Image 1 (cartoon, rainbow, N blue to C red):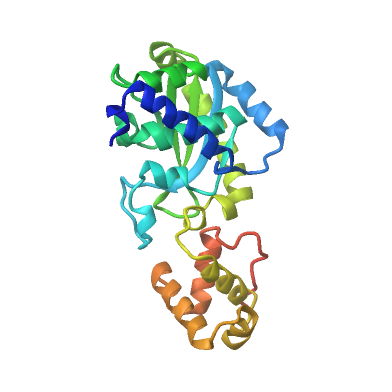
Image 2 (image 1 turned 30 degrees about the vertical axis):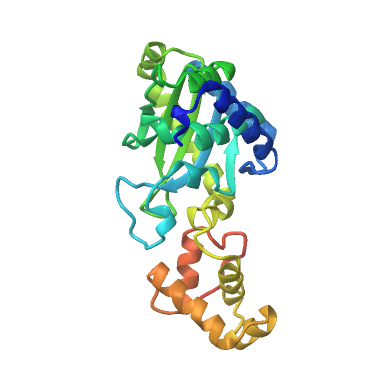
Length: 279
């Protein structure tokens, strides 16, 4: 049954059950220093921003250029189940998961095409009273999806979702006045967030496009470990290790193991590790 067709009483029960579920299943917040969050929030005050979400996702408007099926569509439940994001505060983190799991599937604004730069989110209609109430409870009058290119892959975008207390008209006026300054500000913070936490935020691992076993094999291969030694370390057969490596070559469009490892570093998947010398 669609959420919007439920009676309000049934939906309130669903909301209560979802709140209990979210306690242990929220997307984790990257360990951003509090001072960084406060500084960014202070500078976003001109837009009335009272919360933000940051992450990296696939740009479905461009289409995927690598065959990870989980990145072909930005479905709400897939977004909700990602492992990591960056959140200004706990309330914003809970709002995101509640919205994605209960409301986004029936919110036309979620599915509207968005372009690089600021995108004003369509306001919910009168047929979504509980979403309107949820937004009011969190002091949200306007939402903006601010898209920025990712340097790690041409089909990825870095996204700030800004929650604001301003009306849509007030927001349009504020963007007209401060848009260029905010664009430069978000570019700086996006560069910091993505460079420091891409090993957590890259869509391939964040949306679980690879199994943990494949990632372990990739990490060991990047350390220069041979297939027989990887097999011994992970209690696999050498044939099984090579199967995983060959499958990842196809997924990453790599001709050989060296190129596979290089592309994994380029996409931020192995960025916690020091990059190996190819000389």
